[in-house]
Image (cartoon, rainbow, N blue to C red; front, side, top):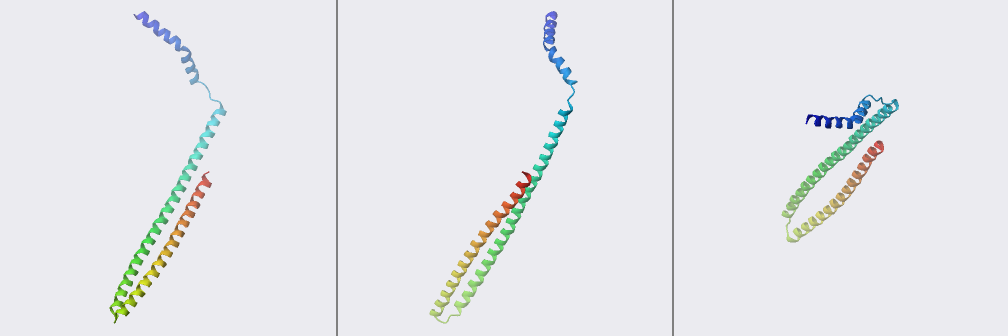
Length: 158
């Protein structure tokens, strides 16, 4: 069996001899200068593009951060305005109660109540109008800011 095993082994060696020889020559093969320069240039280009992509991602992050910071500021303003409106409503309510308490007749109380309802209606319309204008401006400003930020990012990274 040893003769048969050696025979098979020699046959396999002979079959792979060209591959082994080619691999040996390949290890000693010199790479032309032009090929090396091409690879260097491609690596440098890839490195530059990676740096540009990183810078672009930083700009996108800054734009998002700016938009979020602006949103937080606006949310705080809205909260303050709501708190102020609640306080003003409470003041007006207690002032109205005081006026109603000072009424000397039923018709005078009805007149005071009518004036209070009219004043509350005017205030409601005024607040609704101001809120609509505010949110319209907020949306327009937010869209403009987002557009400007993304324009800066995409024009410089493209």
